[in-house]
Image (cartoon, rainbow, N blue to C red; front, side, top):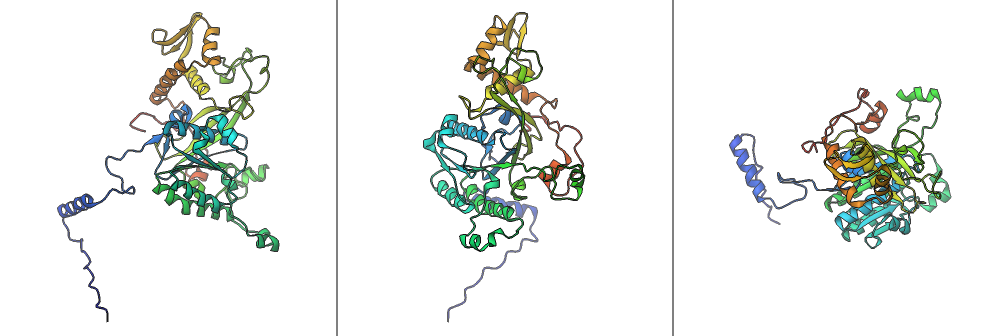
Length: 428
């Protein structure tokens, strides 16, 4: 007979003194080997810049966090979610030089479009999976190939493969509830530990669902009806609770080139929107889109909003025009202004980055030629001003129903005023 193995006695720590506990703890820590799951006191969260002043600075996101974190951007169809994602991919590549994986569940993306935006297609794998299972397997393969940034466009199209025999028998068409939420639950729970181990990031695209019934009765039914919520995202609770960052996009308006006619707002500002030409006059050239954070657990910058300018795929330079955002903010903070006939860029005429003899010369250099050196210094100046701004200028108002969507079925007291959040370095 095999000799029974002796078991080590259970340690009894109930009667240890504080000094003994501290000594044992420090001894154990010294014996530990480096482990990505253990965060030490010298740990710093390296953020990869989005490369967009609205996301990095105005929304207070600071950049893309790794460590297996998840970000989600959602909004109505046609608001520019995919284009935004491809621009972020391009900026990620430029900053890190790393490869990445783009999962196009909608089947609308093309390598040519990513290349037009500026992605290095030698370092991008564009996949159009036919199922959730295929996407999970391909993500694992990409992790083995050195990738750690993954884009999934979009959540409503991430579904499990239905067996052909179930389709032929009609079983697939029987009423079932919660299947998509179950699929997304499996997707995150299977994949997330592997992405975390790879020190990666999952960037998810989602869409807001339309209300089933737009009647007044349906709106009044919000307190007890689960079929007429005005703010619902596909994928179930897992797609609300898993992301550490959640950004909503909403179309403000389609903008035509500046035509010289009087008006108010950034879309009527000749220092924001380019002047019309005979070829572009009267034709939309860019979309102004509001970006609003509904969740930010990375930097804790609160609920904030800003604006991005999206050039559509049909334009000569599709993508996000970050220079327009910088100039719009510069106008808000009076960093593009005049003294008499002369115009200057900077805090004042005495501290000007550059000065122009007249308005036409300023517009030509800033808006038409897009002077890169001036814009680089202007963006730094604007970023400094936004971080120091405690006025609540960029704070966002979130409704009770939106809070309910984010935090669960029981919403707290409705938010009646904007949440003012500082973006000082201590807060970030």
